[in-house]
Length: 169
Image (tube, rainbow, N blue to C red; front, side, top):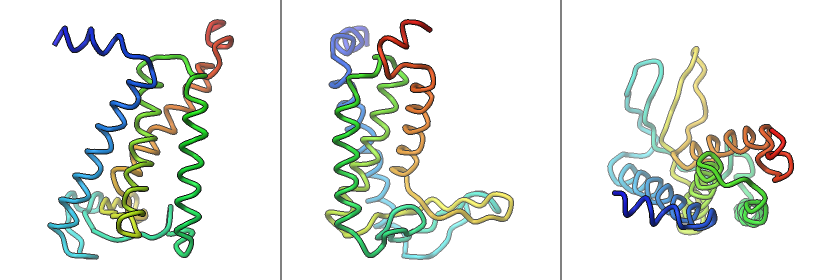
């Protein structure tokens, strides 16, 4: 374990992000493949009554099925976001939070992008209800992107996106 830790510490931030991105991408894709094969479409299974359900659905759009009739636009936007974040990555201070943030975003982005390119839709299955509001069904990739964006916003708030600002704090 110490050898792995030592080897990992020698990697630069971009390589660490690439490794964790692959890990998150694999987790996302395996979850979708397993659930897509195991569950019928649009049938709901209760995990925790009045809170968590599993309902497999196919979504051709983005959040809440927006842009459902624009697959090429969604794919283009995903690629542009990836390129912009990749260009922005070196501006961030190298720390665990920033590595995790970029890896989660990239893993989720690629997970949904792969689905769109292969199937023409993403496979959603997490169905949450809070205070009798049934949220739109989503998947692990969506969760990764959301958590990653929240971590990135926190890093920007802390000034970790700018070497000069982060040194002053």
